[in-house]
Image 1 (cartoon, rainbow, N blue to C red):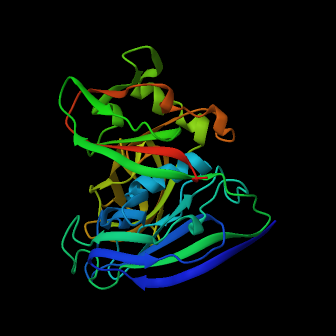
Image 2: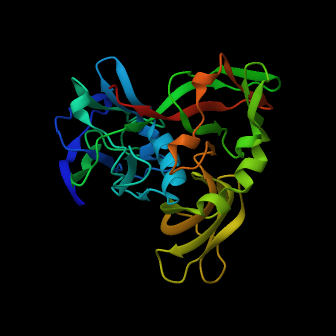
Length: 369
């Protein structure tokens, strides 16, 4: 086989608020699309304001037909589960500093899958849409992102030779979102069209693991005739390091002593620090659930009272407060969950506290004959 990495766009400017539409016209088999996002900080700093906060939606559409629809957070969390590696992420908080974050959208079972890929010749008007809101966390300016500096590079991972006739591609869609309650079950009517390959759930409240909002998750088919899973959320994410490896974030913070730092590695985070000024000693007072309190001291143990640049590596699991349920063997589509053999499929989420909940379904969609 022969492969190509096509740089379709390099650092194209995105709207501060709005949707960038990019026409996709290639006839070559697309194994994956890599999106690289860039932002520039204001003149003071830009604390806890990630590019994945301001890139609010990424879509691939063909007219009214949605082939992909997720936030950047969701696509990064899916990439971790599908590749067992975190996407490239280098957030930075310092004055006039830069941030870069990526996501890899896989259309096959793996990169360079010769049977499952995106064949744009099957569609009439395929378009990539990127929706942005630079003020999602705080207004653009001195302590946020600079207006006019959001950018994206788009790379197509193309199979030049050796692809078989396309059998289908993997869709990733946010199918449901809500605010959880403090008790009771939330019922989600699930799609009945294409086989399920995976289910991602984001259950977010700052400073908590996903099971703070949702304690159990259950898939109920035909009123209990078949139940593929009925499991505690805590049990799901506790084994993720075995299944997918450790999630890692490299982060350039701009902080002073005793500040709380909130980040995206939700469960059981551990941190290693590299201060930017010689003689500094950095560590944490405490660290848990996607946050830590910074201990930044001079060599004589005096607390550092003004912000300084410190590099930190954070390792753990549950990136973006997510957990994932696979269906079947990733390499064997015949083992995926087929919804068409049932009359009704109900996803039941047991609630415990208020939080932002999003459900993303990964499906294998065959091309029409």
